Image (cartoon, rainbow, N blue to C red; front, side, top):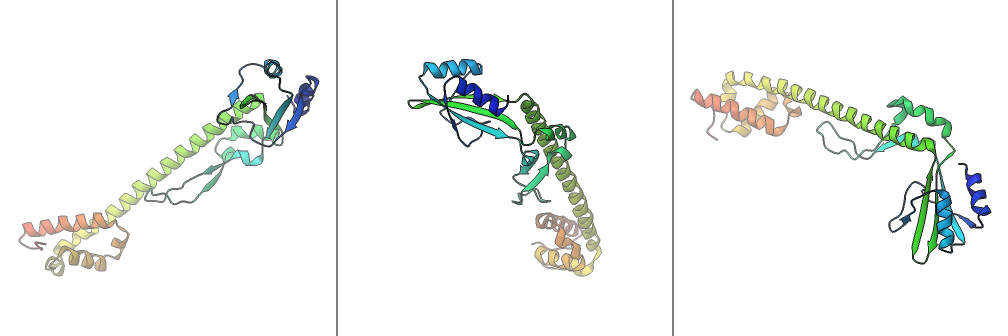
Length: 225
């Protein structure tokens, strides 16, 4: 149903039309949502002695094909606070078939006021539900891909850090290292010898040094602190 057709229908039924801005796809808290056909809604409105009908129309826009991801994650899986705009047809090409509807109304909302109550009736174009379903499927697909990428990056990062940490084992044969008085000094010495240890998680490095120190103690070397 086109907007002009809907407005003509309402006027022919004797209602005064009031066009207002808003979202024709959403109901508001406290609204009564009418169940039935347009004809039934108009009959109900007349029974409530409503003389005016408020009309909201919502169009499909180019921006409706984009998804604004609220939060991004860094390589440590922490929220970075950066938003990302995702063009969903690149994720799900099936959305491209809805481009022909850009600039056209996808939904209408009619409502009448009766005392302290608002009775609302919603009309959606037949293609809208299909678009909405594919839109949500595209978001899910994109989020699944992002999750897989984050997991892959974490695996790569852990492997890289393990490779760096494994180099610390060579220090067990370093006489100067084994004579250091504290594990803190051992850590500083290790970083000086192996600068890439700066990229390693501090806790992982502490555990690695503690493990090596335990091995040195087993040989009668290392520090007791």
